[in-house]
Image 1 (cartoon, rainbow, N blue to C red):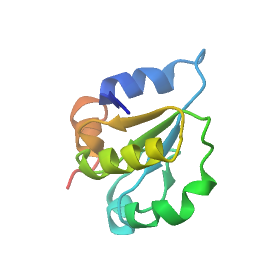
Image 2 (cartoon, rainbow, N blue to C red; image 1 turned 90 degrees about the vertical axis):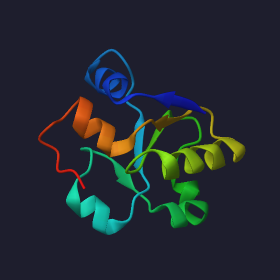
Image 3 (cartoon, rainbow, N blue to C red; image 1 turned 135 degrees about the vertical axis):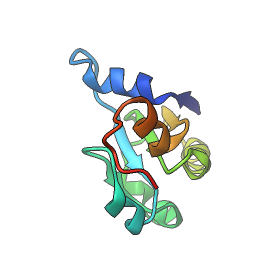
Length: 107
């Protein structure tokens, strides 16, 4: 599992020459209602083991949560399941709001 910083993810998403990763947001529905990254797929952490077949194991995946703890656990789980390239968004949406999008609602 690789760690990716918010500004690195922003650069990746803005780079038209690179394939976009799947953004997997593992926060709870009430958290998603507060703020989220555009285009993210939402699967709450506790449902990932039952729904991981919905994810392409060959696609680059960036796992997202509030601060990076839950997403790190999910990223490690996906790696153990054989997913090829999994990244954890270090600092989560909190870091995204602080480093990339100061208009994002924080909680």
